[in-house]
Image 1 (cartoon, protein in one colour):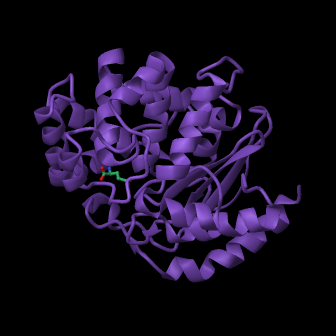
Image 2 (cartoon, rainbow, N blue to C red):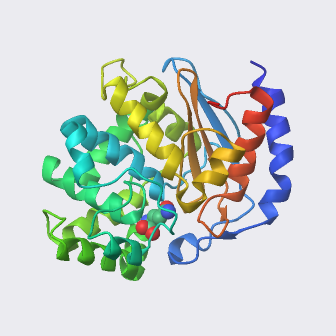
Length: 305
Ligand code: GLN
């Protein structure tokens, strides 16, 4: 595989996208990130082979909702399919922080990637481990092979001070009897999990179990094949929120975005890709990331379709 040529073509294609979109404003600590940054990493299935990357691929950024893939995996690994009684697996067709949809649907979030669904998953992880954010950090350190991965306290406090909508979602969930832990505890773990700072290389490596049909970096099993399939399926229908249809149309891969500008995409049986471009479209997805993945699947034929 000629990664150098591929990276040059992708980097050329994203240049116009770097000028479009807007860095997330609603978490003040994220608003000052330079929108022209761009990085891309590819991690092949064999954990010992070195990841490939270009641009700002070694620059840490706020993982935000990328964390939701990993908390979901940890809970599924412990609970199996019983999780799906508390959270749905349908596309949301609504913004990731919609209160109206949650109220209409009696506190059962559409899927684990809208914020309400992620709060339910974090609540469960907190019950299972006593320390949801710590369990997530330790898992990411192990899977990426980077023991220095850590939280960004400024981002966590910034979101906690301004996270009124997430607080409203958590209270609505509690009102419907959907949380086992106190609302402040669930919110606290959720904000800290979102604040983890990681680079494209480490994220691509950490997500490798999704391309290895559930096998961790050390080849032990985290998820059954069918659980890994379920996460990839939910990423396809909801990983980029109410733009998941457009994303499937353009890119054709299971993927998860975060408002820090990251996108993780999975090519089952082959590799994982992580892109970073902080400027977002109005759905909260990275404009450069979508263009990069669109170009990448077009040039390589790696779409799952
Ligand atoms: N922490 C962010 C929030 O809860 C995550 C959202 C996202 O990345 N889409 O609003």
